[in-house]
Amino acid sequence: SIIAFMLMGYSPVLSVFWATVAAFATSFLHRDCAMFSYDLFRGREPLVKGIFQSKFFKALEAGSVSVLNVATICAGAGIIVGVVTLTGLGLKFSAIIIDYAGGSLLLTAIYTSLIVWIVGLAVPVTASYIICAVIAAPALIKLGVPDFAAHMFIFYYAVLSEVSPPTALSPFAAAAITGGDPYKTTLQSWKYTMPAFLVPFMFVLDPSGIGLLLTGSIKTLGEADWGSIALVTGTAALGIAALAGGVQGWALRRTTWVEQGMLIVAGLALVYPKALFDAIGIALVAFVLVLQFLRRDTAAAKA
Image 1 (cartoon, helix red, strand yellow):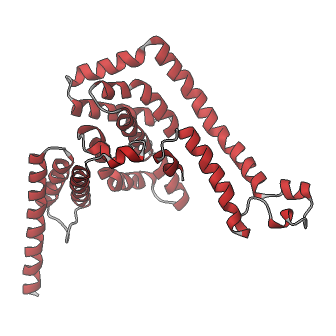
Image 2 (cartoon, rainbow, N blue to C red):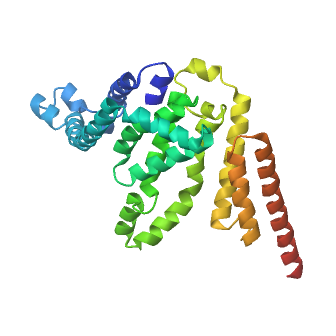
Image 3 (cartoon, one colour):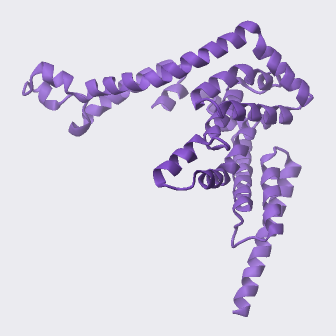
């Protein structure tokens, strides 16, 4: 419902508010989900007991406790953001990034992703996003990247920092629960999520790639070039699949080192938003699949 309200043009704050109201109202559609017991409305339950023992009161209690962690993180991040803003460090930092990148959007995006990754090693996702939105997003925006695409790029990498070595908080927590080796778990999770590290580049490098994001209203979605969006989505999906196959060493069957390298190159080429690179990537993927298909037929004939 939050997405539905945002598509109707509501601000994020109002979208969350009305989504909460909608969730409260729809809870009464079923007895087990109702925020207040049906017996309370029928007079079969004391008023005070019905209120203080209701799901509504428990939800308020749980929400109040949960918001403490978020408030603490935001307060700490707010101090850093305030210092960066008041000293002008954010603008200087973005100028440094662009200068080192030589005005190249690709290099700027790579440097920005590294910055978010480094910040994410030390702080939680929320704080990482807030800090990097101030110090890194302006560099992307100055090079013509829309605000929402730049912020989505940063948020995406802030989330991925949870599975990025060497800290990798999520795999370490999973290893502690399952009793596995934390470093092997981290390496394996990083291999599984590696293709996801390329997805944010589709948001900032290709004008059609921004159509993959929520643009703010139904009107802008209606005006989008869906043909280009479909092409970008298809090539990106094929690129991610090729990269995953190359990293894991498997396509139709186990790959050779040469096939593995070809799949990785194909994955990188397909994600880069140029027709020539897309053609090279598709050709490499097709070549690997043909090789594996022929090798399978040869093995079957020998059997």
